[in-house]
Image 1 (cartoon, rainbow, N blue to C red):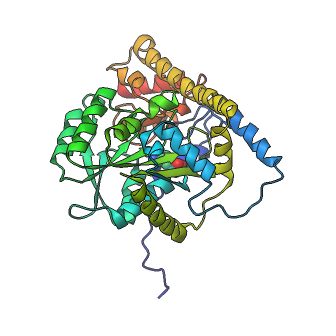
Image 2 (image 1 turned 60 degrees about the vertical axis):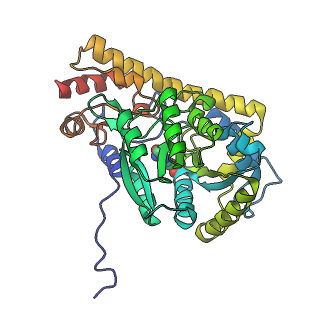
Image 3 (image 1 turned 90 degrees about the vertical axis):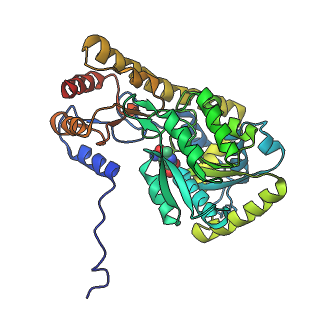
Length: 405
Ligand code: PMP
């Protein structure tokens, strides 16, 4: 028999399948609300002006070559990336107990973090990671790949289209001591529902009491509120409190560098000695997985983060993206509640944060939008706010109105 005859056919990734269907659709008013990437007001990918500028700087730099980077990445990039998420005066940095390793964007950071935990975490029982219900679907696959079993904690409450705070806290309390919890640092994917600062404080307190581990995934810093520091608040608060944690960081969304795969894994240890040992093992793992991380994207981000002027330009570009998305939330809310008088409460559209919004519509209604209106979204009713713009928002609102009536 043929060698791979028994390999079962896997289903296509649902998001990439949705994108393919959108591309094949010839209807003029079609709308793509599936993709998790920023689009400008003309539905086009946006190269940030500051990224264009630093790309030119790199092109003109005769000193650069294509040698391998160190195994743990470009040092001036990882150091600046750590400051960006932890804050420049973070005790975890001033005390020299943070290890930062360049990774293949956020996905690679999640993988490396998961792999490190699978090898070295002092598990209380079988290796398990608590994931929010729901979460980015890839989290499940990433942890399973390294032999850590995903289990879910309550997060989203369909009744309120908001946070199931009590369920979340109960589950933190009920989990065995030293459990590992994955937390979205900001702009929760797919719901757009984040804890408030007051709620984060309670979450942190329980995590500390139960000696849990906080596995932060930060894929949207700056993208949520338009303010890099504000979006890092939860991570910094946990560090201040002394919660044992790591952070997976991605520059895919906030720098529009999706395909460049620029990310980092930051592990905060108790002291510099532990950090040294952690770093040595991360190097060993990274070596066997990718040998050396890619240089181009890291150089771009390093230039932006290490130059005060370019950093200001980047912040302006981030605000451009975040503000357009927030404006779309308000316009959609206005159309539904004031113009169309769509049945139901739509306040969650403006309360939710970041790229995504859980509209609260059901599977049939989502399907109807795809099939009847050529509006592409996932079956869970999640829409990418970045897919909306001044040209298509009315068409979307009218069709949403139709399917919920
Ligand atoms: N984590 C979350 C929650 C995400 O939404 C994403 C992007 N969809 C990622 C990680 C990783 O993305 P990337 O590998 O492109 O940085």
